[in-house]
Image (cartoon, rainbow, N blue to C red):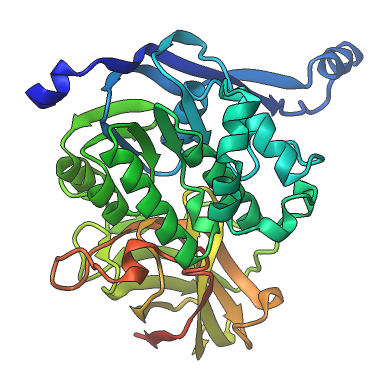
Length: 424
């Protein structure tokens, strides 16, 4: 932190903060239970386990700082923002505020869906501690920025998710907060409106206000923020310069990921047949499973034929860390295997459409038509192996066109066309 920043007053202090959730899991039903055991089981079907979403988080934010919070899905970013926004309380630790906070988190957070847009503007303004006169003065600017003037008196429950985001950001940014908190919800809006939001955030930043921002788009972090925190599995592993935080997030300096994985004992879906068995996967031409966004993904899939099996093809399914399926590649190999035979299938995804982030790669063997999910003869979903896609092009430079700065919400939600395969 620079000496200039050190001279400015602290507007937010997070001290020893932790958040614990209790996870309930259904107990395994014992076999051959006695009557007493059955009664005890019915009285207590669930076993409880503690899960710390955040643990021992400590930092201060001074007036005018623009802080990014980055980390993989499940790292605790959104949980931390909810604690700071007072949506939920920490299990331990203390959060001190010195100023007015406006937060834009998940779509619809802080809105009453039964009320109209107009009523929600006044409700949110009142929550921020503003008088009716102050809200009246800013109301026209909010409606103009949100671009939903014709629907301002319509109940919010009838808005699209994009309209909710427009109004939420307009309220949060126009109410003149001392601290503006923005989660990764701008991905719901269209490209033009997201660029408009970024301009507004830059205006707020240059006016001396404080911004907390969560984003997976590193060009936004680099362009907007002057400091970054990296979270990993609920712990803060770095607090400092933006560029170093981006390197940590992108996986530079991480331990090398395993490029060969044994698939023999990984769980299979119940529909698994007894014809083919995937034994292992080996990632080739990449030493750490970290890819530039335009870099081919290539691997060898070793398979074993338990029976004579004809017309075998494959599917490759990409999902996010949170389990959302984003893209699929169909590989019509139409290969024949003899019983007892072990062979490798070389698969090359030459041009994928994956936005920067972390992905699980699922693999499926099919018989006959690879486009028919009911033809599966072996499958490992969702995680045969893992990979990371960076917001860097082939020349190791961050891509600066609009599609790279603001990856579209639907980016990756489509079929991958440029994929080839060969049975060896």
